[in-house]
Length: 325
Image 1: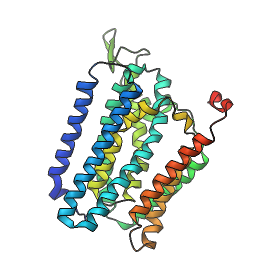
Image 2 (image 1 turned 120 degrees about the horizontal axis):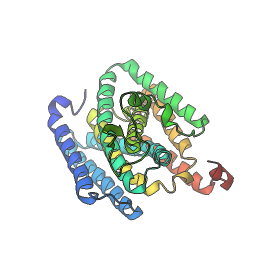
Image 3 (image 1 turned 30 degrees about the vertical axis):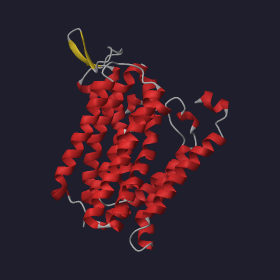
């Protein structure tokens, strides 16, 4: 049974969504009302804000669970939130590689990137909520746990042996389908997603970039949502940790976009994490009496990501490889 069933905590989900929308409104309506190039300093500040808010939530969540269920459950649940948050935040770094490629492909000016990412993140929140709802329902069937676990293991192994491929938005099914119903202009029209040419409504490359980012996030969600269910089966924890990770993704992009290529070994860390959480679902949880220690999970995830980042810095790409890319 869930400790925080939706029927009893619908008010929390509603209040949490109001909080998230309020923070996004402050972000866009107050601090980013005018289009501008987001500086490294600004991105760092906002990244810190989202992390602090996530940690503050963890503290409040611990206090509430302590009062309702006792110290042991409060410790476990809050650690599950932190582990889920770190896991989702780490897997989200993979999105940044896609962001860099998409913006470069469509020639999106730096001052408009925040606008695209803002609405991209907004759409991602909706899709993640849907995926989490579906995942929660499917997790009631025990065989689904093994199916998700096997999928994550295969995905992780595949990531080990596949090289980064250049994106080809024109071959994306969603974009090709969209072009059948609406013409697309070849040039930008400021910050507009749509424009009129000879009286006909056209989508601009800004909107196509947004559409492609939404499509790729759906693909990423197929990996990340099952992964977090390996950490906890509590929908409330899955939902909140996932949302906090997504909220920090935009700021993290502006922090890392210029140096993301330096972390060329990060994919091996992410692949290791996916294989690990898959093994948790199909083997480790059962081997440890139904629940692999959450503290070990947190240490393993942080260690795998940290080692891959450190290895990337210690063994940088050769200059010929970077130029070729």
